Length: 152
Image (tube, rainbow, N blue to C red; front, side):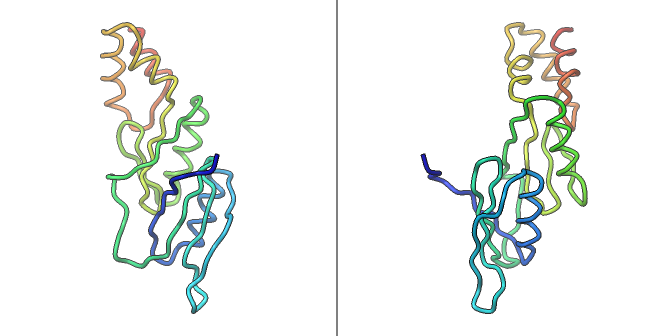
């Protein structure tokens, strides 16, 4: 099945660097590009965890905001740590509850879906409340701390 929706990220002239950055972090590849008549890169396609993103060299008119983010479903703490540490490095910024901005200002949610399901969606109502309270105090999500809070 082909991809029906392709996210397009608007950049201002740092498009080649951004393409290399995302291909490196997400172990993907750049699959195509187009150029302006003067030779500058206009668009680049980059594979991010199996989804093609188009990067557009559109100029300074628009910037990223938290209104749009991309969720990375991490399988374990090592994967959470990898994406968190890599995306906050070199100018990225931590936020609350698993949210982070990369050095270009793109927002990501770095979260372990299975662990969140066990703790925030578990059968124990008091445990869910404790896990939610613990998560609301975290920046990077720590699975052991969520599970400890859920267990009481």
